Image (cartoon, rainbow, N blue to C red):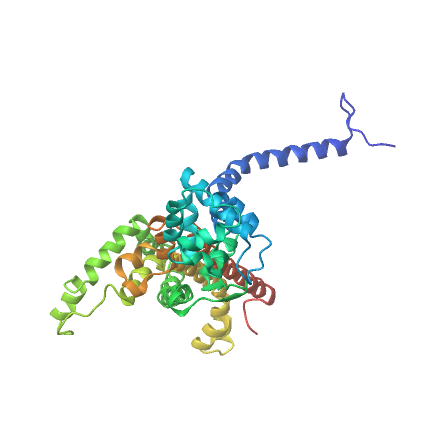
Length: 416
């Protein structure tokens, strides 16, 4: 016998429950939709656009369409056919008239230095389309570079619509005339060193923040609430001040005639000023000051949840305080160490203002070059590729942290 609820509509109870659950889920989704839309348009769409620009390659294909099509079947071993030369001559004349040649020239100049001059010179010299069978002679007569494989290989490689040129350049790699991936020449290989410098500075700042922040977090977690809340105000105080203001304050403090050098000389510790700014030392000091709260807060939240009974139990079983701390207390703080370390490191490797103001030429991180290619040279492809590599490194770190936290949660934080 079917179970019905005594209502006028005689609706089954199971159907009513499903309807109520569906209504509850729709209400919850409605509350989340604004947040999802905000994340989509302010986070996911910009990142997607950045990633796309790192592989987008439309300039040459738009300005020299016939040449790109003619080079599809070119194997790159010898010079292209006469048809390719004729197509190039036609494209250059049309692009010069349409004023679109400069876009392709700028893109090809990234690959071969002087390509902008070559295309501009050829566009001015080609007054009319060469006769059939004479395009090659006409172009090589204008400039012998049209008789070199490297000149044509650059057009074929930039034919689009997508390319790996920018991503390879961000890793100091490139394709040779045969299409194989090789290392870039030593005088052009700079980004691997910059990435190593960025990760090195980020790791150094993270370790410094951990060394300085761990005792502070332990003190805050051990004190009574009234005193710890008072000290927490000093930890949060830097958040109330602009990053630019804090960085400029360190310039005043660290310069040769600044308060720190004057104070050390007044105390008789120094005879002459110590160089503390526009070098790696100033970068470490300023970045550590800015990022230290991001290490203290995750550590404090984890330490506050650790029961003092563990340490008392270890002491009652005869463990010395140092042994009890290392074997009982410290393993339980690993999630806080991991969260604080990951947060500080990710923030550190993306820093731009602080190294630019207090660091020297050899202390600039990858964010400086991303900003340079975005605003100065308008090479958005390379800027996006550098950002994509940095984003990939961040995602790898997040995955590793997730694995470590999962492993810690599975095995337990306290060692036997």
